[in-house]
Image (tube, rainbow, N blue to C red; front, side):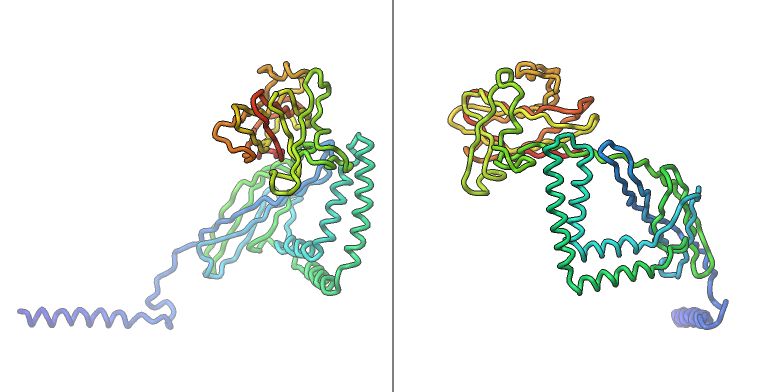
Length: 392
């Protein structure tokens, strides 16, 4: 019986080998199963739109551009791509390599481009600047930068000029973008909702389609970062190169707000968080710092700064954001006028060691707010290195 089972096993094995040998990839339609797999298309997109507004928030120009990159589960099968967009009126397409080549030119001419951007930034400020002294400083700075720009242009080497010329030639010779490119840039004429479709076809002729609704959002002005005068309390840091570190922090009336703080000076960099000077608040608690800054209604901001406190007795120091409705120090202490506040005491602190803090606040309906600096009687306190950003 075992002998027959043994022979039967090898008989079955022989049949399997025989059938397998009939499959030959060299013979068409012999032993092959039809491929029923279709492509699975997808695409990614990145918003690369840009815009510019004047100082009155009037739009100067806007480019609504998105970078699209197609993909498929059959990347090794020789896929073909075909884009579509609805509505299509006014929509243009751009070769994906164009911005890369333009950025390469800017990199070659880095010094020239940096000076050109700085000049443009300062020229942008002049039409909306009402302070004639600031306008004069801006114009003088621009004139100096233009001299530097001409010098930078004259110092461009032959090698750099040749590289730029080669890049410009590459731009001139770029193929026009087509709807069959795997990656391209769509430029939309206006904000709105567009249907962007993608058809992917494999090398066997099988195809599949996918689409997405792409919402192009209206360009809006960038919220400007408020300017804090003499943020680190150093001499000569006003717009015209003057200032004793405290001029931006003097209250409109010392009788209603108190006398401005004193200055703590160090002879070497690195001792203070920034620069050579810090604001010093004596232990009697009678000194204040007051600065009104412009803000954008509805925007949210983060104000950061450093504090240090002596430790020979209990003491604290306070930074507050106050409504411009307050006209005295007493009014600034009313709850209705306090937008945000933070108090740091000296419990667990080390003398002469600065710590960083931050206050987040919303501008609400205000077009300006007051940064108010005070300390309670007790010990000397110091503040330094104020900075403010728009919270995104």
